[in-house]
Image: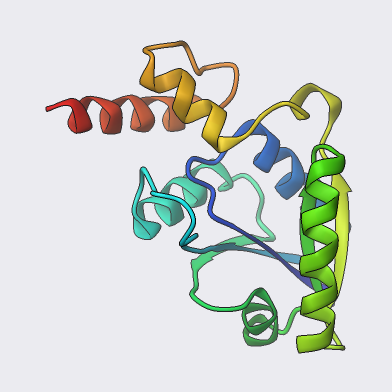
Length: 162
């Protein structure tokens, strides 16, 4: 049985993320979505909120589980018995960063491989940052995220204004 981990901040989870998750779920026996903190970003949602949201939007994928983690992606992979880290690529700029991270991960854990999945064309432009930007200007984000996520983002934006 092959287990893969798909680490990310998922703040918020987008249709692009869900595309990668569902495709990974078809390719691997088990997929663990690892929700991490990113010290370079100010999160809209807590890690616990992101885990809860991801559990709800992936509940139709029986071989997908979600968990929070801190530290290295390779450590999460080892904890889960995973031999693969899945990463999504939207553009060449993603590739440069992701290749560097894959090489570092390979040095940290030579038994864990990184597999890159190119995002489906209809989501190639999409990022969590752009979703938050559109939402902050009261724009409609329903084409970028599931309805449950759109409502949660709108609630958070309203709370931050108060």
